[in-house]
Image 1: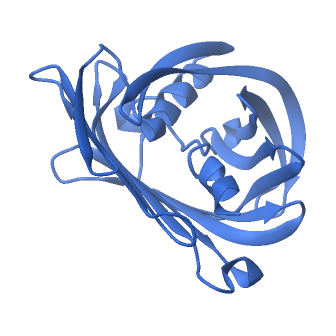
Image 2: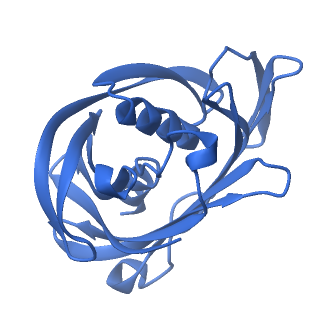
Length: 228
């Protein structure tokens, strides 16, 4: 069950991301459904720190019958800054607790020494930092920035589980979409792997719907509350 929520947790795209001066603090809440039934909620927030860096936090938890025996919870934290109009990650962490094996993952981006340090399952490793390397959440900043500037698709390099991988995305359509919390919206439909995200340009390219296919299951997340 929580494997699907985990997919959604890393597929959200925050907004806005046009430039550092355009960013502002916000908090967004999403309901998560599995094959039409509510199984959890997602909360994402963005906060500017006193030193000018940014902190993004995403939390997911099961609710209702999905949390009957032991609730699943997951939290992602990313600290990053804008450097030459590009989001540069500084530190990333992912923590999961629930019915499955607990997970703790941490990444440290040491740009001064050009080293990426990774902790996963109690094991430390290091890699040489690549220019413009991103973590999974900061990838979303870079992707949204590219789409807002007219890019129809691209591929970025991502640090993930002690490895460096490619994340591809493409804009596949424009679509009118009704979201109860916001009404009728003009959206951009974006595909990344088996995840489809609907972004609302009128709301700083905020994701208003996310859908993920996993075998015969469909996990869908809808925006239900936004505060700035």
